[in-house]
Amino acid sequence: MPETFAVAGAGLIGRAWAIVFARAGHTVHLWDGSADALAASIPLLRANLDDLEAQGLIDSAIEVVQRVLPMPTLGDALDGARWMQECIAETVEAKLGLFEEADRYAEPDAILASSSSSITASKYTEDLPGRLRCLVAHPVNPPYLVPLVELCPAPWTDPAVIQRARQIMDSVGMVPVAVNKEVEGFVLNRLQGALLAEAFKLVADGVISSADLDKTVKDGLGLRWSFMGPFETIDLNAPGGVADYCKRYGGIYERLQAEQAEVRAWDESTVKRIEGERRKVLGADDLGGRQVWRDRRLMSLLKHKQAATDEFGS
Image (cartoon, rainbow, N blue to C red):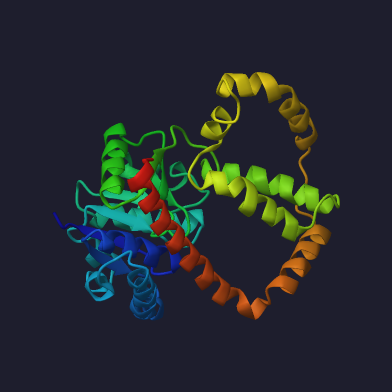
């Protein structure tokens, strides 16, 4: 049954969430503190939706975009909405102000969620009368192509709200996971951070170039990781499963961890080297075009994964 979702912030992530909800058949009230950003949002949305239609991932870009309604105020956006997805600046101060206003105007049973990629919900919801209904719903960019969403409660978030959030995210085509307690960066960014930390060290130490490091992931680890997680990967990489794998290779990984434990800043010289190598491959003026290429590759991969899941199961 169609319902109403509010999206606060009409930037890249806000527009992507609007697509998620509208694609699922719901009305989206889209608001932004900048009138210019709000005005620009619908043409940008339409361009993304045209690509989705061209790939056969939606039936009609026009039908989806017509469900997204720009709203002049946050209060108007929240009127009748069962869910608010906040997508504004990544600062505690900005989120404090918005959540205070949202808690006043939102429907009594509406869930208030943040797209924050690192700031835990306790930092901006503690003093709210409706703090039990607040959480982080951290997506991967762009969420309409990469469906994982981390549901991250504050210590006081009602467990029933988390359960309802999971059901709502399932219903709009997302893949929700529950992060059981607050931790900076949540889970996805901590995993990504661990890989990036080792990648920077390997390049800084001259072990490998940034281009070959990227190939190691995209043409090696990433092929398996596109449909299996790390635990399933090692479970299938030894005859006796995960326990057998750990018995065979645990000592190697313990030695690697000891080497990898050193914390290093992403120093200026290494960043400059990687920046230089990347700009030889892709000019700064071509970044936007490559982002479009990335999204179209993701669309193709999503289409393939859907077909493969239908044929082989998940």
